Length: 212
Image: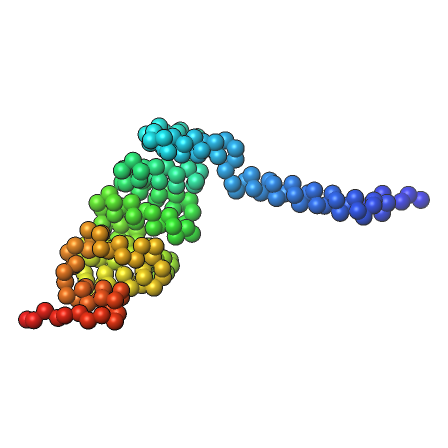
């Protein structure tokens, strides 16, 4: 009569083997979903060159890496950021759009795409991108602010004020940037905008109405 060898295995050894297998599986998963050593080195080199002022060289580093792996989300994002630093926002938009296609769930990428189009002087494309963002999430503070700025540039006071109020309520990072943002110049002196700004920022102050 033969005995089943599995019955003679020390339970502690079996537990140890199980833990090792779990650790090995976790390590494999990290290698699959995170940049490996080569990718990390390429990113570090690129950003080191950027901090030294070698922006074009940094961008070429990332482009060479993208040529080898065109589906690398992180590199499309990093290349887009570098292009913004190089004052090439339209090219940055191309890279952010590719990154957004690779990660359709990322609200941040849709915002970067809208911002890049805006900086490139393409307000229609920026508007489409920010509408797409806000259709996915209505509480993206910076997206709401950008929507307010684009509406202000078109002279749409009520739309701009509505989005600005929402941006403030959701905690936009720089609440008073409208003061220096040229997008707001077309409506800056409009009485409706002045009243709305006072209501948002100085709710207890008196606003003198201009006589007609």
